[in-house]
Image (cartoon, rainbow, N blue to C red):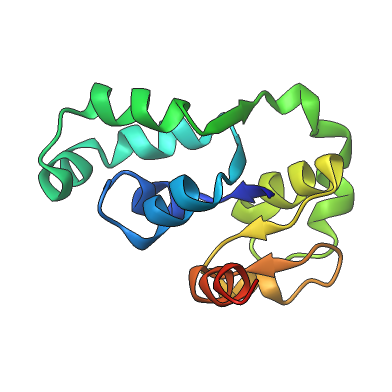
Length: 133
């Protein structure tokens, strides 16, 4: 399964013992995310290292094992289109990338679910979907 993951999912994935980490490893989920999400993660570096007990660089390296980061040039032509479907401008790169790749989004953000262009799965919904197969 391929999905675009938003920042909150990446925060969850920073913890190896999280439900999100278990889903990715057990079901071999391939994730994509806009590269700018790395700056969002670095803004919360102290919080992430405190919660995980791991060095930040180690966490980022681990995430690289199952997340492909996309440069803005790869989806920038779709940003305006994506923005028409969203109330929260911060979510636009995730939707634009998902439109480009034609894959669902993994997010626990209710605002993303309000658009109907691309399916959005919460972690709970992914657990239900993957364990029902």
